[in-house]
Image 1 (tube, rainbow, N blue to C red):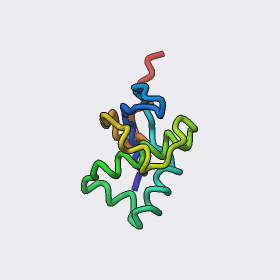
Image 2 (image 1 turned 30 degrees about the vertical axis):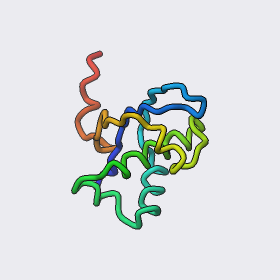
Image 3 (image 1 turned 135 degrees about the vertical axis):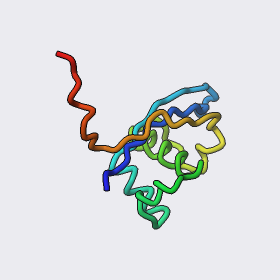
Image 4 (image 1 turned 90 degrees about the vertical axis):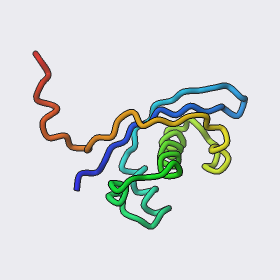
Length: 101
C-alpha cells in the first residue's frame, strides 16, 4: 500500500488570539503517531476518517514543526476551520513525467 500524504489547510487562533491559516502536509512521523494513538493502521483511513483524525494529524504537523507548542487538547478549541487540500499517494506513478522542459 502506498502511504497516503495528506495536505490540510487549518485555520486557528494563536494563544494570543490572532487568527492564523497554515497549510500542513503529513509526514511518516505523523502517520506513525496517528497509528500509535489510535492503535490502528493508516490504511484503515481509506474507509473514511473523522474530524478528530484530521485535526490530530494537522496538530501533529504544526507541533513537530514548532509552529504551535500547545497540547492537542489545548489546541482543538482554537481551530476555526479545517479543509483537506490534497490527498495523494506518497509515490505518484505518473505525475512527475510532465515537467514541460
